[in-house]
Image (cartoon, rainbow over all chains, first blue to last red; front, side, top):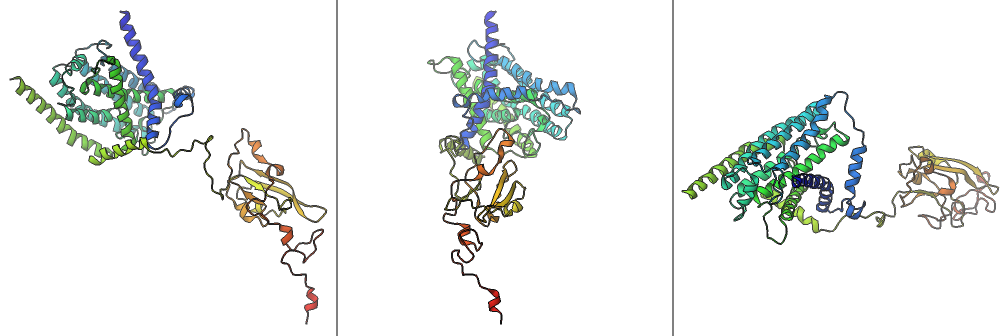
Length: 316
Length: 171
């Protein structure tokens, strides 16, 4: 039983520190890709910029606009943190480091990431602000439609491994990582994952060049910080899921412990997310929806059907 | 689709490019010689003040940050009794330098004048005067101008004809 609490504490500690550290990582990497240095003054390599940012967020005026729906306004940022942190419950960080070994782990992940939509919608709605509402509307439709083929793309993995349990999915990749048989599914999940975390290039719910800051325009102080940390946790979550489902999770040569393998792979995907941000232009809203429903949706169904057909054919 | 991947690769390669940043406090940015920075009052080659207190700079200043009072010394040279520039207002447009008939007021390539209190940004004459001729070495207004001062009468200036008695030119 004590072991169990250690795992929960360890996972929470690691995740929240990762999310905070990503502030520094993202700014540093973006700077590198733009021929700058990024934060390099406070502390070694500018690492203390994380501390400075956090202190700033804590001491900023925590203002609730008088026209806002107060209860929902306060509630919305908590939803994003909660839903993302809950998704990590089913993530296998190592052979035995898993908070809850659910037999429907993948479905639980999908359900929790869908709940994340509520934070965007409620936050935008409760702000009682045109831009926030526009952002929330965009966020709702974007996340709900990308949710569809995110799930469908994952079904290919489920067909191959024959389980919704993430630990068993990882175990099923001992012979070959699912990136090889499920390359199309991987691409679709990657795109859907970027849209799901509303990161650039799919950050149209916040789109600062058109909508001020979209659904969190009215937020300040630590309530904004929750959205901020929620976004970074979302990146970590999607990266972790990509690793778990397609890159063999914690599997790797034995000279490093499994957790380290998991961390290295996840970090590579986090860097990829930041590279997306550094290099891609934001699509127009209708282009995003069209791309989703007319390209990714048929592709994910095709992927599922072909995978299932091959699986059946091999079994008979 | 391919172009997206290509642009991602090209941007990834930027990681290994040279940085554009000047690490400022340690590494100064090269300022052009005509950079419009801190305003200074220059001196003529003999070490005297160039400013003659004509108020043209104060008149030209679009934000009215220059104030001065001109006066005259015993030799007949005009000079500012006080000369005050409020740098919290100054926009470093350089109009004062353009307006100055004696090259006295000049803008220098120096911008490091931050202070903790606004009052510190009000520069008095002794803060503004520098021991240099600035951009116009060798220029001495009273040696060129036709104004009579002690020790130099009308017509004694450089390239100046002796004064003509206009009444002698009457037909």
